[in-house]
Amino acid sequence: MSIKILMVEDEAAIREMVCFTITQAGYQVLEAESVAAARVAIADSLPDLILLDWMLPGVSGIEYARTLKKDEMTKHIPIIMLTARGDEFDKIRGFEVGADDYITKPFSVKELQARIKAVLRRTAPALDEEIIDVDGLRLDMSSHRVMANGNSLEMGPTEFRMLHFFMSHVERVFSRGQLLDRVWGGNVYIDERTVDVHIRRLRKALEPEKYDRYVQTVRGAGYRFSTRL
Amino acid sequence: MSIKILMVEDEAAIREMVCFTITQAGYQVLEAESVAAARVAIADSLPDLILLDWMLPGVSGIEYARTLKKDEMTKHIPIIMLTARGDEFDKIRGFEVGADDYITKPFSVKELQARIKAVLRRTAPALDEEIIDVDGLRLDMSSHRVMANGNSLEMGPTEFRMLHFFMSHVERVFSRGQLLDRVWGGNVYIDERTVDVHIRRLRKALEPEKYDRYVQTVRGAGYRFSTRL
DNA sequence: AACCGATGTGACAAAACTGTAACACAGCAG
DNA sequence: CTGCTGTGTTACAGTTTTGTCACATCGGTT
Image 1 (cartoon, rainbow over the protein chains, first blue to last red):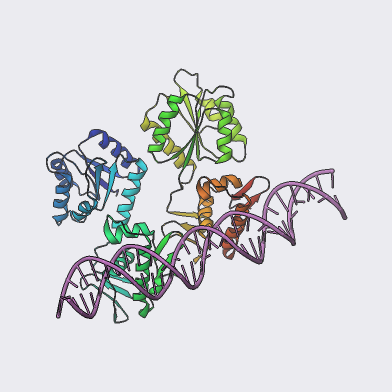
Image 2 (image 1 turned 90 degrees about the horizontal axis):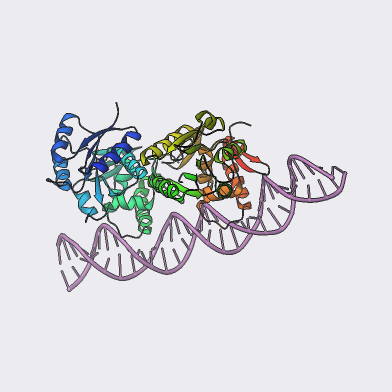
C-alpha cells in the first residue's frame, strides 16, 4: 500500500513539477485544481498528506485548511501549505489553522521531498496521544501532568511542551533551531541559546526521579531524548 | 552534506542551463570548460557525478572518460555523456569507455534531472540516507548515533561527519585534500596533516568494536573505508 | 643496513560549545 | 500596588573538540 498525496494547486506548471517530484519519490499523487475538485478527491480516497496552495481561486487555501481541520474525518491529515514569495504569508496564521509545515515557491525538488518526508515522519509518531509513557516516565496531556514512580513532577509550560515533543520523538536528535520551531511554534526571533536554558530547566524538573539523564546533549548537533545511555 | 556534480562543457549557454537545473534540484555544481579545468576541479574536490560533453576542444570527452575510468581514484565516479543530435555518437562506444548513461542535446530540464537521479541512485549509495549499515556497523543520522553489536560508539562531531562520508562512499579512495573539502566543507585553510589526526581519532573510536581496520591507508594517495582487508 | 619520505601517536593550548546561575521584565492574581 | 511565576538574555564557568607539533614508526630504496 503506497502513500497518497493530494495536491491542490491551480497553476498547471507547478502541478506538473510537484507531480513529477512526488512520483519520483515513490508516492502516489492526486491532483486537484480547485477546492471543489479536492473535496471529491478526498471523499474518493483519503490521502495521507495534503499539499495546499495558499492562494486559490474561490475558497482560499487557508479557509479550506480550517475546514479540513474541523472535520473529524480529515482533521488528522497533515497539511503542507504552498506559498509564493510575494504573498503576505503569516507563518503564525498558517500554523494556527492547522498547517503542519509550509514551503515557499519557488522551491527545489529536494526541498519539497525533504519536507514531505519530514512531515510524514513527524506526524507518524502520534503527537496527539493522550498519555505517553517512556520507560516509566508518564506524560498525561489531559491532566497536563508528568508522573514517575507515583510522584508528580513540576515544571513550567515551556518545559512541559518540550518534554511532550521529546517523548513523542524518542531517540531523535533535534537542533536548537528545530526545537525553537517545534516547541515554541513558528516565528521566533529568539536566541537559540535560550533552548539550552530550558533544557537545563527540564533536566532540573526531571532530576528528582532520575529521568534527567534521558535528556541528552549531542555536541555540535542538538539534543535528544532517549532511554539508552 | 550535499552532492557535488561536475559539468565539463565548453558551450557557455548549455553550462548555464545545466547549472540552473542542477542547482534547482538541490545539488552543488562545479563548472569546467575544458579537460584541464576538470582535472583541477576533480583533484580539488571529488565530485559524485560528472556530466561530460562528448565533443570537447583538445582532449575529447570520450578520451577523457577513458582516462577517468582507469584512475583508481576516479574510476567509481559515474559519468553521463552529453551529446548533440548531429554527433555521430555510438552508444556502444560510449558505454564501452565507461559512461554510465548519456543524454542527447537538446534535452529538457526534467529529463536531465531524471537521469542524474537515476544514475546516482544506482551507483552511489545516497548520501542522505537515514541509516547506513556497512557490515554490521550502523550509522543513524536521525539519532546521530553509531552502533555496532548493540553498543554505541562515541566520537567527536568531525569523526562522525567523516565516518558518515566514508560509509556513503565505501571502497573509494580520498586524498587528504578531498576529505578536507568534503568533510570539513568548503574553504578551509587547514593543514592537510590534520586529516591524519582525525583518521587516528576515528580509528580509536571504532576500535572497541574492531571496526578500526575498515579505515585503511592508501600510501601516497589517501584513505579508504572498506570491508575488504 | 642506512636512509628518506610518508604516516601513526600522544600532548597541548586555543577555540568552540554547553552548563549554570543570576537578572530583568512582563503578565497576572490577590 | 505587591508578590509570584514564567521567560528570555547575559555573563561566566566548565568541558569537549580541534588544529598543530614534535617525535616515533613504517615502507620502500639505495
